[in-house]
Length: 441
Image 1 (tube, one colour):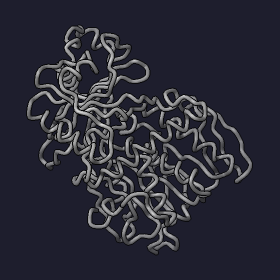
Image 2: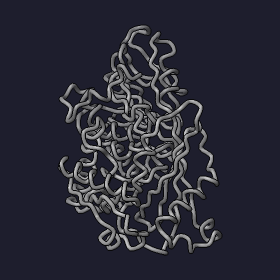
Image 3: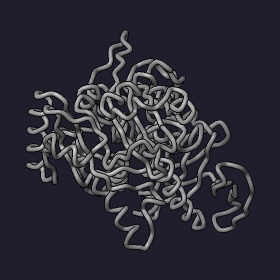
Image 4: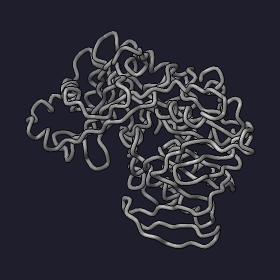
């Protein structure tokens, strides 16, 4: 991998190291306009928004590398089908949905391939019900989504079977269909965003500091309320205009660490919610035309955490990526920061999927084990179901952007736009008041 190290703001010296064979940009300078702590999809898109929407310089700091947390373990759907109009999160999800589609369209207009660059597939989504009660609720959902301005339709069992022949359909099966929902590949999307960010390095406006945990805040005169950057294990990084913490489910512990000498308490109630996804490689038993999710996923997604309960739930989600792999999910449970794969959960995901796709029952256990991969990630869960996005009360120039649970990828672009507008003092595209830190942390 080629690494570019800044000797000054204009003189570049290439160095070689080995991280995924890609260009990484580091810098000997330690002063930037903005320091972003967290190299997941939220942190990287915030950096991208500053770089493309202003003339500010940005440093990204992470204790590991991009896609090593929840971002890399996700399924990659950019869906509105499981969102509810009128909720606090609706406008943020809808804005992000539009921004992802705008990005894919812009790439196409430039003669580039969004499928190759982002893993983009405009598949549409199906939220499937298998009981009369679920189908009644889905019809109401279709009505609500239509009233909110989305193109959607209710598919009865004959029409659903025509859309997805591999899906088990009976008299009480129906689905909400959103033709403009899409999906992408998290690793490809992150690589694309990283590459775009690194193009600003030649101007002295961008640098990355990976494998370098943040350990404390720097204040302008040592004891003031004005945050001037972060201390890492290796260096001091100054952010003259803003320091933004976007570290997912690690935000609670990191904020405690960063604020230990500030006499200010900010308890970010974000918790890790472990999830498994099953990837069946080179899958050719059937093809999926759409992204599919069972109706019960919505209820499992909104379940509350109890300090004493694991609260394991498994709901069927199914997509096919651009490589032809079948991606099946998903589980949710509260087990702390454990990321070990659980074979019993993997088996439950497979068995649940087989209830919807009978051909999976014909695949032998040996073939299943040989061709599978498992993704395990920790979703950053917030008790009220909303991410926290905003300035930290009591400290100037310090911001939080965390707690998106399973929607970090889908809501990343809207979150980045929102927090950059806050820092720059620009009017927000959508109401940000519901996501503020005050009263929630």
